[in-house]
Image (cartoon, rainbow, N blue to C red):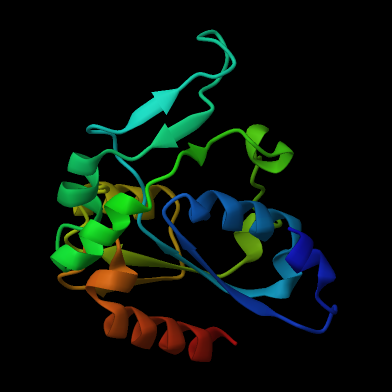
Length: 177
């Protein structure tokens, strides 16, 4: 949010949210709708062998999510190169779910602010973390201005289909900027 607040009022941005980044860009869309040309949303998370910790006790919200090796291999990096998966497994760190004030509180999205930002949903057709059918349900429940598909991409579209993602994002930016 600091970055968005630091922009001059005459500058607009194209936001891209991947996985948990959708939460962050939703907050930015609600807070700074007039500064956003378009928001592109790509992918999300499922469970499998992921671990959730409750560092503040079991009656409080979970504090971290740690992605499991099976989850990474079968959902996130399913179509990526083996060496990318191997690197990813060495980089696994806890993802803090409720670490910051902006994330730990409920984000209320309004049609006046959040709804005023043009949105493009990018479907990763082979995303095992978020099945295509569920992606379609999300699109139906919160219709974007446009839907793009990246054929043969897993959850990590930027690794499994980097050129197609780049081309799609440039096309979106050019169309809405």
